[in-house]
Amino acid sequence: MMDETTEDGVLDGKVRLRQPARGYRAGLDAALLAAACDAGPGQRVIEAGCGAGGALLAAAARRPDARFTGVERDPKALALALENIALNGMADRVEAVAGDVALRFSGLGLPVFDAAMANPPFFDDPDALRGPAAERRGAWMADDGLEAWIGFLSKAVREGGTITLIHRADRLADILALLAPKAGSAQVRPILPFADQPAKRVLVRAIKTGKAPLRLLPPLVLHDRDGGKHTAQTEAILRGEAALDWS
Image 1: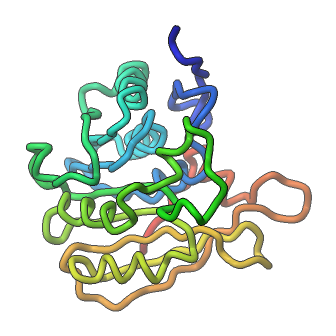
Image 2: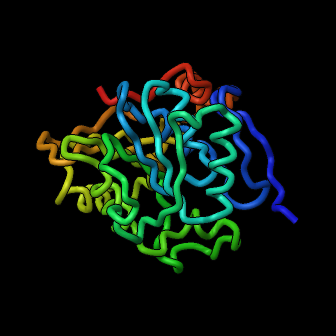
């Protein structure tokens, strides 16, 4: 029997996404990562750990003149990603391939990309949280650590190419340290639950071989306290009416 899936609308219905009814489901982090992808016309983008394609397809819908490749190690997630690519009629410029960030990028046999993006698993220490359900473990636990993810992204892009990821705010120092040997010109956008609360997420973008100093950008505030689910800015991003630029 096939695992149960649901079909959901992303970007206000512009993208249809079939994903597991149980286990990891693309959510706000994937939407923000897609909104932060700033690939230009003709550029090639790789996403490490694309899952069922939530961020991959949303980014492709936002950047119709760019080409996208998703890499996924889980066969069931990869099958869903391929199904979703076809479902959205994007097979001419979006693909998904089997691969693992724990292995060398060169093993994929692909030329380097103009941009790389990822929403890495948030934990690499099994003692850091109560064990997730088996169907969620791969999305929550980075078996080879954040170092493997950033190493893969760094190898996947050309000199001058961009690396963009979303992660826990308390890992920002680790992210910057891991990027430093290969990438610079880092920009950080904090993601705040509310305007009066500390950031729980950060979006980080760096340029391979970049030399500019670190820039801390204005935060994105997700929720307000007037009863609305999201702030107007966040709602516009989720609907595909706004992007998260890096200027």
